[in-house]
Amino acid sequence: MVVSLDLHEFILRARVLKLFRQALRTARKAPVHAREELRHTIRQEMENNRSCNDKQKVRYLISEGIESLKRLDEMLDMQGHS
Image 1 (cartoon, rainbow, N blue to C red):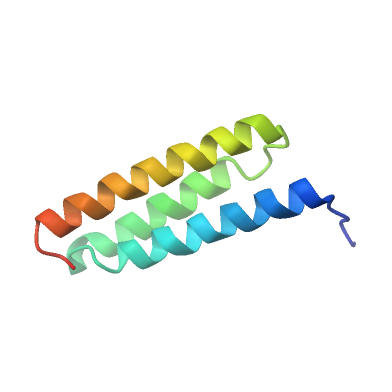
Image 2 (cartoon, one colour):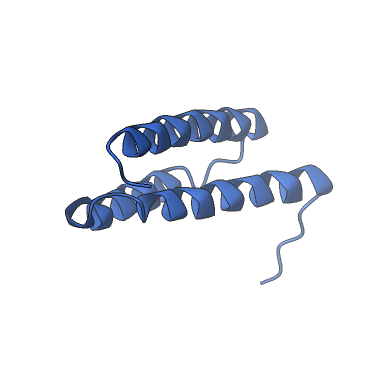
């Protein structure tokens, strides 16, 4: 089955995938004992919203994800996990 995306859907999908990859890279900075749980949480958040077709909500979720990722990254940096 081939799914055809319009330009805006394509761009939103690319932004979601970029956020997912950034989150997984940030998870690598976490302490060893917390990495797997963090990766699981990231994956679960993505799966929970996978079927969302409301472009406005997707944009909101992306911005919330970016903010959460920034906070996580700052927290890990403060703890010395660079």
